[in-house]
Image 1: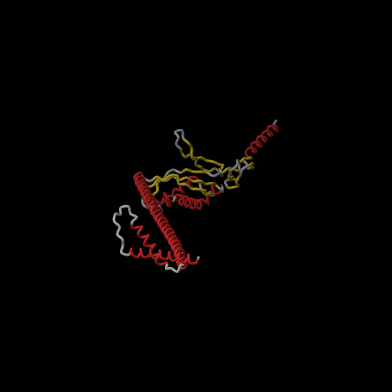
Image 2: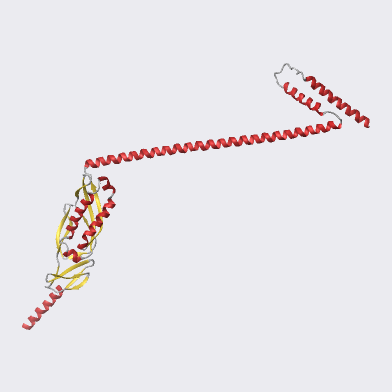
Length: 334
């Protein structure tokens, strides 16, 4: 019976030892093991073997955000042994900062960080979330204190990058990687917000007035250019028209002159054949045409014969004599 009791005790001890000696660590978790109060090893995801009684998981203090029954959020601190290696986000409480132009502003920061070295996160700092929060608050005060209020609103990306760089360098010895910092809200006092809204509205009105003036200016310029182009085109059309009319008139005159020259040549040739003077004929024809124009008016009642009319009659007589001589020569030749 004693042997069975001893065997049962040994079996129970083995079972307990086995249960305590086998530790399963989940994915993206790590456990820091201390042996007799000193760091021994870090357990990663999977099945791990430890020695009960002498190996113990290191407890650290961690802060969590919990949703309360009334809908508000509250921070709770707990003792944990399993370190979460996933990226975590912390929404830190709003804090008041002072800008370079002495304006009190309320800022809410959002921080994304990840533990890369569990041993440093356990032994280099007592409470990682609290340390990161305090460091973020002090760094944010220093960065914002170098900027005016207008620059604060216009330089969010620059502030985020500067904060991330400073915090990442400071938390590297804690085994923490700062991935991103975001300024969620920037709330200046109500009177400052009112003044800023008026300033923004004034800038918008100014911009609208400038754009309207520029639009009117461009419209007038385009209208003037249109008038100018139309005037140029119209002047070019008139010039081209005058040129064509002048060319047409010149061609007409040339053709009339050519016709008259041909007629004179024919008359001259005709009078040469009868040994006559064509000048009298041409003068008589011109006088006849002039008399025709003088008497062509409808209201003409009195016709004054010019002094030179006797010259016309003598020319006509000369033509008659030339024609008579021509007939006599024709009969003699027969």
